[in-house]
Image 1 (tube, helix red, strand yellow):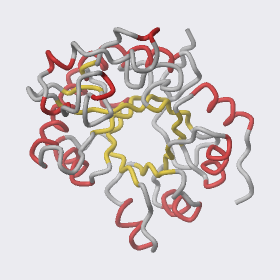
Image 2: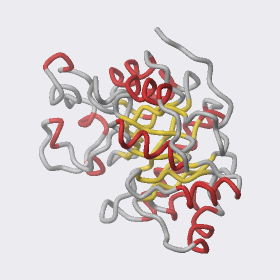
Image 3: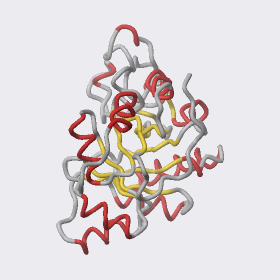
Length: 266
């Protein structure tokens, strides 16, 4: 199995962008499962991004979708089901019969199995309408507790679209780097500065990313990540803008594109 030692913390202005496996190697295996994380570690990656939600009985669970439709569990929400029911679902059969019987992982199982082997980018799923701010705060604190219990603070970043979740995370444990996911960027530099100031880094939709934002972030000492770059064109766009890390569903292909590409003139 390919295995790199964990890299030092990502810095602004990396010579070549980091390769981040989006939900594991989700091109090859069902997203957010043990199979996807194992497949990701076989590629030359620098980190794995994954999604964390909470079961009805307070267990942090690795799953992206709000409901369990994809897993054959109907339109019920993850947050409405106890962990005992969630872990009985088939998390792999939807991808192919080869993965039938894959199970959802708890955050605890994820950290025990893959923590310390690569950078883990834990995205807290805090959707509007899915419970309330107190619920998301509890999920965030339980996630940090699990990380701290295993002394993994130095190889974990916490991501979210919701800035209030990241505020709560920084209050709870300022040692863990927070990363704001951004679908679009503020128009003016003052707005960009306001967004960047409290963060360790920003993670920007590649369709919205531009070098003006990256240059400002770098002047402020902040790295910039970009998602989701599943084609040569999006990889080249992220590199041309100066992204320090790139997320893709197929990390092996991404790694070869990064090695073969050189940023276009900016």
